[in-house]
Image (cartoon, rainbow, N blue to C red; front, side):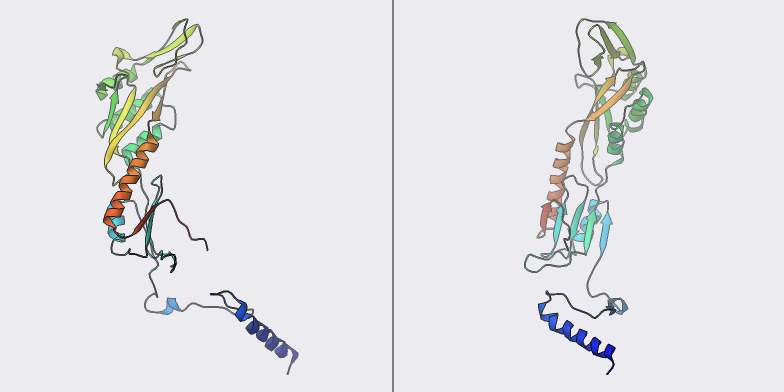
Length: 270
């Protein structure tokens, strides 16, 4: 017998002798062997493996309801960025592969997206006017310092005519509509007929497929240059998101009863 053949037999015998020391689910193969899955050649797959994604809560429920069961699990991200149903999650004693999933990617509504985008930069007078004009008919309103509503046309006129004034002062004051430049000179921003809004209030869904709610944004006038600039700051955003997360969790628990629901995320650690 040739030396190469004898060597191959010896190697194969060594591999066989080591099989009883391999962990469950592992196999020892000679070099250059190739494992080919035959599932793809069959008329149907051996099990379901799908990834369904939507931005609509109703469609997520409709897809998940007939598929989830006692071996499924649902994970809701605390910031509502994603809700994932792992249909074949399995249990602690009988784990499954977790590769059949449905995902709800929560998407901000157009109105809230516009308001949030405005908070990420300083606004000129025209940009603030555009925001009021674009969304004044879709749930955006303006309020004064005393929380009294200001009609959108009047608020726009006040923003358009806002001016920066310098005057002598002996005190330094920091407020929503004024900021001190030095101890002897006070810079004050004023609008025509005192209708300059101090607060923007949005009544609209924060996320698509959720109920509308109030979102407030505080307006500050920046007086560091000759032309006024505006800054918006969303108020109690985290609290609002937590409230919506609880509502989504309650809706999921009610519609998909019997399925374990967790607030958090999960990933396969294999």
